[in-house]
Length: 235
Picture 1 (cartoon, one colour):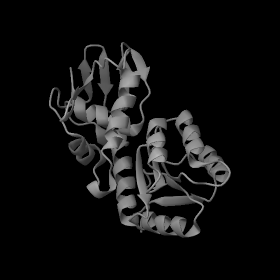
Picture 2 (picture 1 turned 180 degrees about the vertical axis):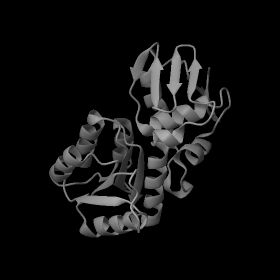
Picture 3 (picture 1 turned 135 degrees about the horizontal axis):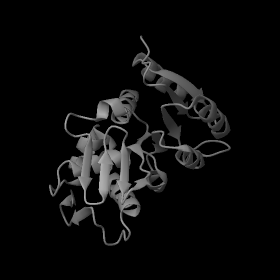
Picture 4 (picture 1 turned 135 degrees about the vertical axis):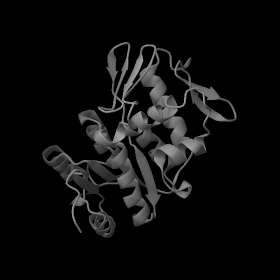
């Protein structure tokens, strides 16, 4: 299988050798280059030296746990992270999303589904593939969204968003005042099987966007809640 030279390495972090083996095989069959780590400390060292394009990260790790590792990754930049979590650990999933994870998959999971998630996240974070003709920049008052470099500014100040936060904001901003349900946002922005998505994911990401974009998140300016229906972007 020919590798994808523009995709970079995928770092897979899990202390279960079988999980690493299966995930790596599916990703490599899909044309990606994969590097594995079985504990948090090794993953930190690999992340620092190889700068992977995306991290598939198990939360339960020996030594440096997955959430701590996620904090390190997010502090270093906007490298996309997909969490692997136990089906029963809802609190960990929510905390992971609040820290800045872009997506999560619950164990036991479909390797094919995970590979699809990786493709989707990388496709959405490729600047050259994100811009479309006539839609390179969106401006609403003092909010500016530059699609090509994937940058957001409020009153001239750069706002740091995770890849998924950017995707969600851009999707809403491209359809001002249109109301989307959480399920619609999952379908359009996360682009994966509804069987693997929790609508609470949207609630967490909307909350993070409001924290970053609004001076008063309790009185949001840009993303309005339509009670009982969903959310809409207010230009």
